[in-house]
Structures are given as structure tokens and as C-alpha cells.
Amino acid sequence: MDPRALPRSAYRFLTIFVVLAAVLFAAELTQPVQRALVLPWTEALARAAVALITLLDPYAVASGRVIESTRNGFAVSIEAGCNGVEAALILAAAIAAFRAPWPKKAIGIVAGLVAVQALNLVRVISLFYLGQWSLAAFEWAHLYLWQALIMLDVLVVWLLWLRWIDGGAASHARA
Amino acid sequence: MRAHSEVVRFALRAIAWLAPAFAVWYAVAAWEARPAAWLAAGATGLVDKSVVNAIEWEGRIVRFVTAIEVQDAAGQAGLMLIEVNPQLYTYGTALVAALMLASRAGWRKLVLGIALLIPFQAWGIAFDALAQIVRAGPQAAAQAGIGGWRVEAVAFGYQAGSLIFPAAAPVLVWAAAQRQFVERLVQAQSRRDTPG
Image 1 (spheres, each protein chain N blue to C red):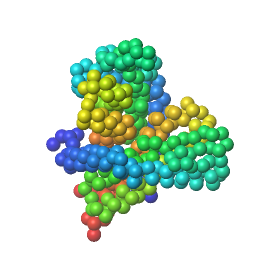
Image 2: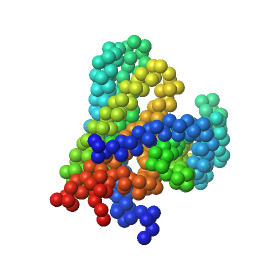
Image 3: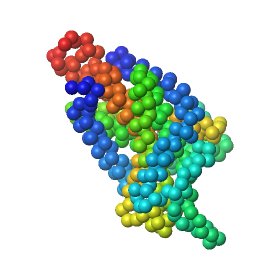
Image 4: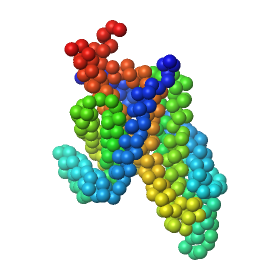
């Protein structure tokens, strides 16, 4: 067999991943899910970012999805693509699609969501200050660099989870 | 954490390669986006007969000259022009390059990985253009053959093309191309230490 060819297990994973991601994404776009989950989550993200910002800088307030500087009026609105929801969906689909015990999938998804949202908070806060310094730098970081970094975060979390479950399988084999 | 240090080292290499990868990508972005833009122009014709008559470039922005007739506020008729920033959909080139270089892939895999992103990038550009047609109003959409369920399909395609594909496709392409590297990376040290 050509070692470069994808094994059946890889095709199985890819198929399930694509279907799961599509279903989760389609569900996320519906109005009921937006109203019940996505919008409240985004507003909570803005409040969390301001809570962290005001540890050192008192001149920031959150209003809905918007974070505003009370010093110069600069504001950022957390929109789709910047609330970490899509990245979380991709990670959840990648973990759920992999053949592993469901308790370990659940742990991976929860831990992964925390990791993704932690970096997303860094993104939001960094963009808030970058925009006050340079709109060109803000646009570049917002549209390109941070999108890549967040997806790299998703990949690293998934690889670490794979490593963790593989370590468990190896321990069982030795026992 | 020691058991996961190889993954962390790979991540740090990928981050380190991102800076030069983005620099090179941005320098050639206007040219690098052209295959995807041409593919996108052809793909919009899949909705109905030729929506796009011509493609023009103004710096980094691609402009599609459509066959859709519109009128301005003064009642003057003309053809709808759609402008798209293709960089919104092609930045994944830098990400796949960084991942390939961080995983020590050869230049052939690097080139192949970049080429495999073109359909995903074309998807994003095409649905950006179609979404602009829908937003222009029902008359413009009707001329492009977009009505009924196709409006929802364009909305979904646009969201997928802008929120998911640009960042996720590079990772998928890389993982498929570097599968053996990924397998070595995630194998537990204990499993690798066990002979046979």
C-alpha cells in the first residue's frame, strides 16, 4: 500500500468532520441560536475583556458587543469571526470526529474551548489598543494575522488532545 | 508538559515562520490572488449564465464587471461593478506556508499546499461577489438568477467562505499533506519507545 495514500480512517475522520462542522455552522447562523447563544456570548466576551483591561487601564467600558475607550472615544465591536465561536465549532467538530471515548472527547472540547477563548480575549484586547495606535496595523492584525493565530491555536489544542488520548491508549496497552 | 513539548516546539516554529510568510504573501498578494479571482469569476456563472463579463484590477482590489443592469439615483443606467478584497480570502497562503515550513515539508508540498487552497479562496471571492448582488436588491439578484432558496444558499456560502474556509482550509490541507508528521507528533513517547 502506498504510504502516502490516506488510510480509510482518515477519510472517515474527514467525512465526519466536514459534516459536523457544516451542521454546527449552519445551526450557529440561525436566528434562534444567534439570539440565545451567540449574542449573549459575544456580550459576555466584551465584558470579560473590559474586566481585564480595567485592571490596568480604567478608561474602557463595554456596551453590548462594543468596547469603547472613554479617553479617546475609540471603539471596537466584536462581530462574527472575532467572538471565537467559529474556531470553537471547528475544534469541537475535529475532536468529535476522531475515534475516541466520549468522556475524553468531552474533556477535550471543554478544555479546548477554554484555550480558544483565552487566546480570543488576548486578540480582542490587543486589537482594542492596536486600533488606538494605528488603524492600518489594526486592520492588518484584525483581518489576517489574528485569524491565522486563532486557527493555529485550534490546531495546537487538537494535536495536544490527540497526544493525550494516544498516551492513554499506550498506557492501556502496557497494563 | 514534557510529553507535549514536541507539539509546543512545532507551534513555536509555526509562529516564527508566520511573520516572514505573511511578509512574502502580502508583497505578492495582488498577483497571488489572480488564479482564485479568475476561478471565482467563472464560478459565479454557475448560478446563471455569465454574471461576470470582465475582471479588472485596481491595486489589490479585484473588480468584477457584471452583466447586471442597475440605475443610479439620477436614473442613469449602467452595469453593476462589484469590488472584492481578495486578501480577505487568500491570507491562508501564509498560514499553510508557515505550517509546511515548521513541519519541514519539501518545496513540492509547499507549492502543492498553496495550490490546493485556490478553490477555497475562489469560493470566498465568488460568494462575496454574489452576496453583494443579493444586497443590491431583488432586481439585481433576479438578473443573476438568485432567487428563492438560492438567496439563503448565497448567504450560507458567503459566511462559510469568509468565516471558515480562509483559516481552516490551510490547516486541513497541511494536515492531509503532512499526515505522517502529524502522526509522529501525536504519538505518545511511551508508544515510540516500545519496540515493534
